[in-house]
Image (cartoon, rainbow, N blue to C red; front, top):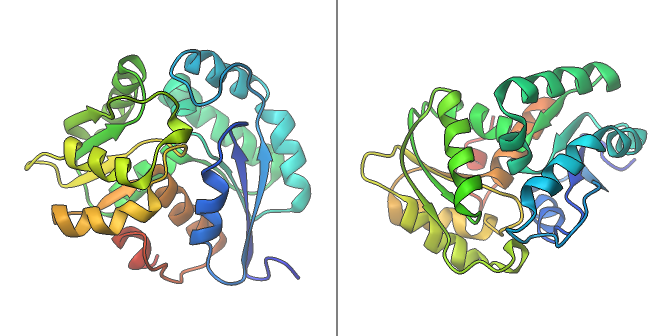
Length: 242
């Protein structure tokens, strides 16, 4: 049987080419990963129209979730960080509760997984890096602060034309730009920019934990399905196990 240790379902932005390969790269043996595309319109991955795409995905979320639920995952993940920034803390919590009740298994978000991971690591002061425009970056910073974290510094990746054209090398550069001596960890936001292959190198060079939306949501999803196997090659959050 596929997913004999557990199944994880991901709701994916329609133009995102990154999330599926990175989740398959991180999934331990015996854990299957399953995907449904969310509904959004416009030029995916571009800064222009991101807020409108976020709101469209939120409005149509139930449709995609109902389809994904048919594979009977042990947990369902909203695989889009900036949707949480659009929702805000209260609406995100209400969505998680409603979707969990609707389907009878845990519903988690990429950003909620970051919050859980930072608390698990004992992080209070974080450096924050994004491939977004200034407005979405500031909104994400405020969302982190609303959950009780001090944002020691933040940086935006320069020259982004389309987030989905970015590379792990650019994610590495963003982590270096975002870091500050007083930050206890670095958080790279977003699941469209490839981050998994940059995390361990960043951790070695910065001497502190580095997590991304991608590594946090896989870590949290594995916790939800009770798979405690360490995952190598993607930073200390996943390497230390659950």
